[in-house]
Image 1: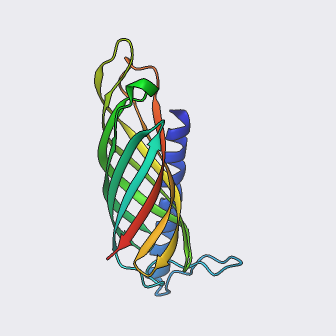
Image 2 (image 1 turned 135 degrees about the vertical axis):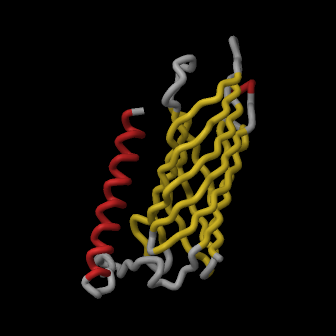
Amino acid sequence: MKKTIGALVFTLSIVATLSANAQQQRRKGKPAEPAKSAAPATLSAETGFSENEITARLGFVATAVHLGASFNKMSEGTGWGGYFFFQTEKASAGVGQLMSFGGNLKVNFFENRNVVFYGAPGFGLHMVKFTGAGSSNETLIGPSLQLGFQYRIKEDLSVGLERGSVSNWFNDKIGSSEAAFYSATATMNF
């Protein structure tokens, strides 16, 4: 839980710093300068990407399928949106059912014409069905975090990999405070 909180605070401080810098540049009448690196990285507004994106997720945990989707309204590499995630139950493998939804802030840490590295901290409601002895259903509240990269195969379509996690902040009845999952992703811009 401390790692999740630390990652969330770190990501939000980076976003606040970048936003403040961009605001100062705009007030001076100068456009925000893109980050300098060996490969020219630019902000999404400069690469011609649209403002809306939908991401679909598919993965497996011990043969239990998980599916997810998110929508983000992007502007210059950051955007607000929402997510939905569902993992099926696989009692024989000890994997419980999980459904989670909430809001998030997506930040593209690095972006060029072909590759995007991003993070999306958020907060949501998680409904968990535990398996095994003493199985129970719990409704949890806590943060979520998606970290991933994508490769652009068309101007409006990207594919990649993502690590997602949901955490519990307020319920002491459960043993684990974080559930992590890995997914293949596809994002469509429109």
